Length: 407
Image (cartoon, rainbow, N blue to C red; front, side):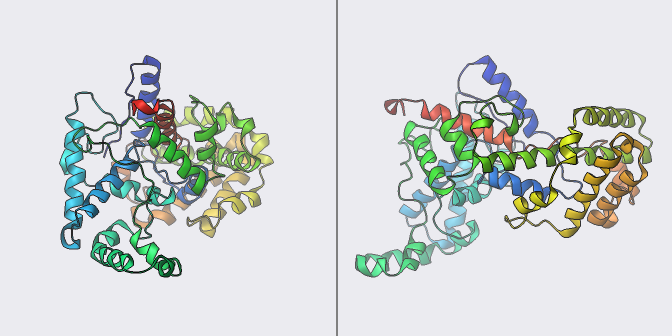
């Protein structure tokens, strides 16, 4: 699925920004060829909880609960609950694609009803993380167990409030969606856009403050104006971030900038094996640019023990092999930065890493996969979902700036 975004105003500068972020969404070079995704996502989840790189617009956080609340209110049974939900989401695609105003960021904007991954699956974890989804079940488990949920609700209606208070398990079962989610507009789902109402924006802020009060996402949403920067550590309000937020960003920046060099060497090594002269020149130039931009003094002073303290045990698998690879790469950068472009140990480190990860499908071992290689993969600097977060923050700010009677 190709994601895309735009704004509902006619500000040319805002449109230019949206198109630049759109290009990042569509970037095909952001693949994790060296198995660093666990560290990357550990940072991203702590900085911007509930987000993902394939989320598009913030108001889907309401579209999904509204669809499910409607199905529950109709008492749709488990045997057809999932089918009804699927149809409702695909119907929404048709409505949004048929809007008088072109809405970028529509799931299925190109594939239409043939869309394979529905918004509910993409936003499900975020809905739980932000506290809009109350029931601790996967989407499929929720579909299958809806009859049981209906039954428990009926039983709770026959019990006294004292009995329910003494049995929190009942409340866990019957409360699927947060009670204070703003009601769907009368026009939904027949007339839909991505503009949040003032009440919806205020509700999201309250949910973030309640569920992730110390995250950078919440701080930015509650305290900062829009910032048109490429990475979160470039934010003009960086000095106002909490010490924990600044520490996390410092390590995220060092990880992003330092390990990009390994991705460039990976692509340069493949280009040499494949005799791709054009790509050799491209990745050699990229290496020189990376070398000039890298703060080698900061890398030499980078405490890796602190890096692991910040990222290990945060919900993502970071193996000992991954830690060893990162440590070995950082050591090479510290001691042989100027020779890395042709350093045998650097080339062997990245090739051996990819071989261990991909085994028989390694591009260093499999001519077919090498021939299928596009010439550049995984070279873009890690941004920890920042483009997606910028979209959410802008959607949220637009809603917050609205007058209540404009909603």
